[in-house]
Image 1 (spheres, one colour):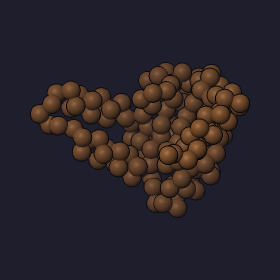
Image 2 (cartoon, rainbow, N blue to C red):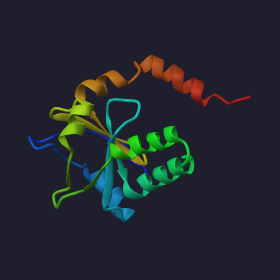
Image 3 (tube, helix red, strand yellow):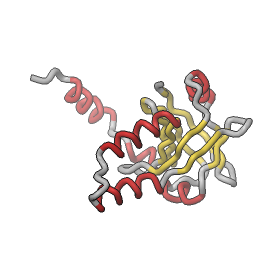
Image 4 (spheres, helix red, strand yellow):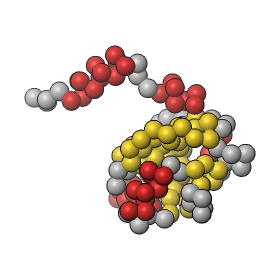
Length: 149
């Protein structure tokens, strides 16, 4: 499952956002109805996980949790406690809880970006600040793609 695209959208007064049709088609083709939303660990945006992708992430995280280590259990607890299970309504919308809207700095305008097997939701301000200038991006991409010796 791969999502591709960068779509501008609006959150309504209740915090509902339309999931773009291109992303809904990918979910439907994979039989995914349940979604999980949480704030990103590193950036000020939200990550929307299809249920199967979320479960894979949780399984990976759980495989590294030592049940006798308080710190690893706390990391797991913090990761899952920030998540919300969602479903799309009949119009293809989902509700972003108020606390997550605030955490991501989302007012109305959002950018919905397909990033591999997840979907990112950015406020306008954070979206503009998150990307490299074109020349710097080209240099970094070239370095990443260079053959390794």
